[in-house]
Image (tube, rainbow, N blue to C red; front, side, top):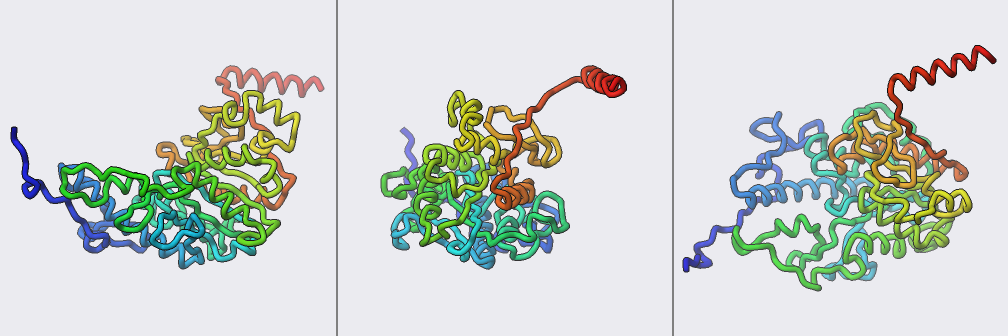
Length: 399
């Protein structure tokens, strides 16, 4: 049997988490480009061995995380550890909250996708559209009124809009549904994706096995993390948040599903405090999450969670239609759904749609009695449409 000695195995590749050393820089348009050719974006494939490509990409992602974290702190957000009593080197998951959390009358909480790092919408958008656009920096700027978001916001709209003016005192909470694995050696919480790209004994060794030491108490997976954010942060009325603060929920994929499931189970306690919900790529099936008879239940009881979802919740879907156009969801989500302006990648929905989302959240917060009528999408061919128009014209002439 042929056996490789340990010293004969290829060394694990190492790339510095430094943009310049990786051969990249940040342009005046906030985009990451090659130093050798400023027209070129990040190059993933640099080797036929996938391990080299993945480790290099992780080094680039670490650079992006440092930039995004620094910019969010400059906007006034601070890190908070969960569990709240966890010490620095004990297993914990970091979230970010704005400094005005305890005084704000309106709180927007964001639950992202479990595959993303804290503060990141999509690395894909960071690489293509810009750092602020692909992260939550532009969104945080608008929410915290730190200046109008610029043209790098991702939807191509460079002029100021009503979503960032005349806003109430609004705080921001960035949950962290992705970084739920505790890496003991580095003393930090990381994503499952990053776990695969951490240093190994050699380039051909498998990733390290996980043990209970890699779990964060109370945050073992994304649903439990969502629960703890509600129960440890948002329910701390009179301590961490104002007793009368109202909360708007923004959820992407599983993050939104987790928030819906938690609120559905605890609606009697949270009904007075939830203003509205916006979901990017909603994953819920209403007949499963809200009950098989949810439509009748919503009509029978206007205070039910099903009624709230129908009137003060909306989803944004992948669609080739313009942003904001009503569209039909593949799943019966129990709420109205709209085109996001993104047709291919669900992780890129929020970078494209966040202005539309924020404008609607502010509208719902300003009017507690506001409620959307349930839209019914009908598909007709040209002949049927012409017949309907002619019939309506004939009816008008007779009247």
